[in-house]
Image 1 (cartoon, rainbow over the protein chains, first blue to last red):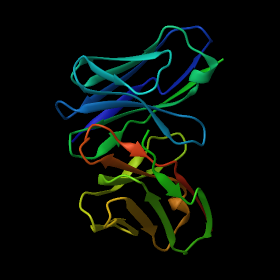
Image 2: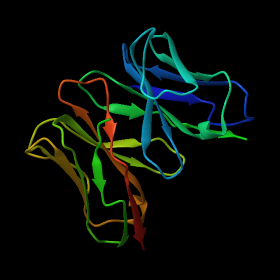
Image 3: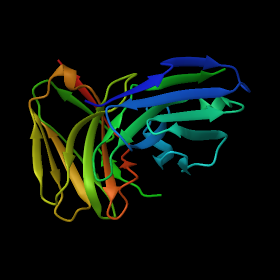
Length: 111
Length: 112
């Protein structure tokens, strides 16, 4: 069966510091991978998605970036965090023409 | 960007009552998904729908893919306290199977 992992689970970072969140999927090949951000009590905002290694589509201009160095690994990064980057970050995977499944999320607090 | 209008925004109901929520769009969708999210966790897929008119159940949950392909609804029968959470609809537009569009969520509160 397929599983999706995210780490860390929680993170507290100062403004201006770098960020690296990691997501890995097990039990499937060539998945589409997604990064979402969710503000408290709000809906899901799609940040990036990837249909293959090295292929990244950006949905929202911001100081975040994403990379897919391996088939089942998706990384969300920032060189300098802003206060507004605080939120709940969710990674998800899907196969084309199929459902989407979410990871457990990373709670990021920028102080 | 594409918008899914999900309603109601929130619901306060008594244990045992039935619940209904829906999502509508101005565009045609090929897939409708319903998720439940509990605090501090990722959304969990409840039901997936792929055909217009399709009616699918998962325990006390029933969801339907609207005939026009522009809407979907989710019903929960005989609600219990553990149904508390935020329910999201999501869909894939016809012709684009790489992106999912999400509704803004329905927050469900169940009073014992």
